[in-house]
Length: 180
Image (cartoon, rainbow, N blue to C red; front, side):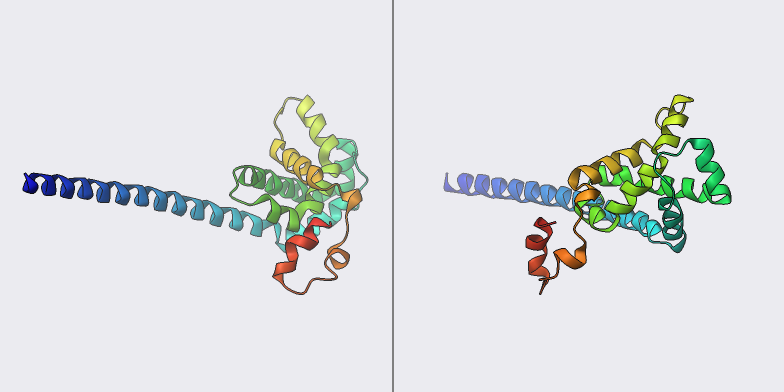
């Protein structure tokens, strides 16, 4: 009888070991997938750090908000295609932020201002194109801008040079960030 109980105990232990191994493997697969998605998100963010994206954003933010589409195109001239490419980059990042592949706090630290300002320049053009039949044009760009503005409207901005004046180490970041 003791041999039967020992054999049963060993079978239970083996089954538990296999189960733990399967669960561990599934957790590892999930972590690997998340790491791959995060790496893809980081690569996408690098496109926003290109010289062309930066210079295009500077051209765009010099324009008044909400220009009619025809006037926007006229003022931008040959740069219009570059502006649409920049808007497409913001559009591509929106779902990555929504899925958590790019943490919204990190995105906001780097691109909140540029996202909101660029959207303000293009929103009337986009609304006109949507009325003309492209109902979801730059929907993720708009969503991303709304999220950034909701987190902290630009009119309430405190520049990092002021907000982080008392920064001494990375341990200060969360405390000082809360004051922005």
